[in-house]
Image (cartoon, rainbow, N blue to C red; front, side):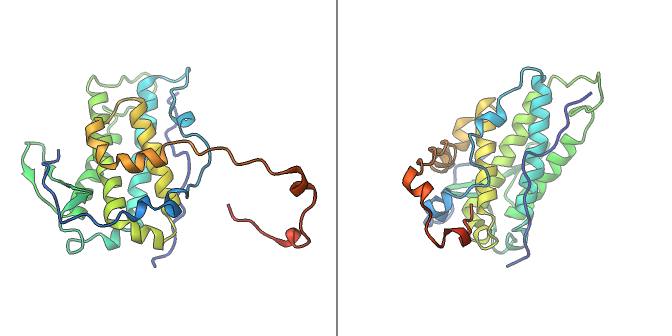
Amino acid sequence: MRFKRNGSYTLNRKSKPKTNGKKPPAEEKKQYMEPEFTKIRVVDFDLKELVVLPREIDLNEWLASNTTTFFNLINLQYSTISEFCTGDTCQAMTACSTIYYWYDERGKKTKCTAPQYVDFVMSLCQKLVTDEEIFPTKYGKEFPNSFESLVKKICRYLFHVLAHLYWAHFKETVALDLQGHLNTLYAHFIVFVREFNLVDPKEISIMDDLSKVLCTPAPPPAPVPASSASAPSPSSENHVTER
């Protein structure tokens, strides 16, 4: 029986409210790096525990399961702001100081709008993860020799989408109150690709500042003093704490 390929957490949608080194216009202030946003997550445990290969699972099965999950979650995350990512607002696929160009199967380089680029990415990923010859789901079916290189290709493209979400659409993400989901998804993805060396560190270095903040396990909460725990304030019984 194949390892079931599904997500580790879900995204609750709300109602609407190869690089070339060229640099787009001057960088704006990175809103996504502000502490009030980086501290927001939907899980509070070490994500390294989610990505370590279980002893009873084949490596390729694990890579296939996680890659398929990340494709679905990143596609869903992008869909929440897709109406704001248009040919007019995002005339190029940008992230930080990088413009991404699309290379077709013949190696032809094309500069396209961000929504076009993301469409190319998601169409390619969908084609690969649903191909039984590449991502087999039937017992006894072997993974191809090219499997790891294709997983690396998918992860590199998915990183481009995540980087663009932060760089160009974090404001909309905050407006939809989905920054916690994006932060958790990004951190989980980065920890995963680092664990299995799936993306060249130089490729993801443009987001190293965010990765350093989000991928560092949060310190344990400070212990509550015994006196505070045993002597609640008169109004504490009716106080609701959001977490």
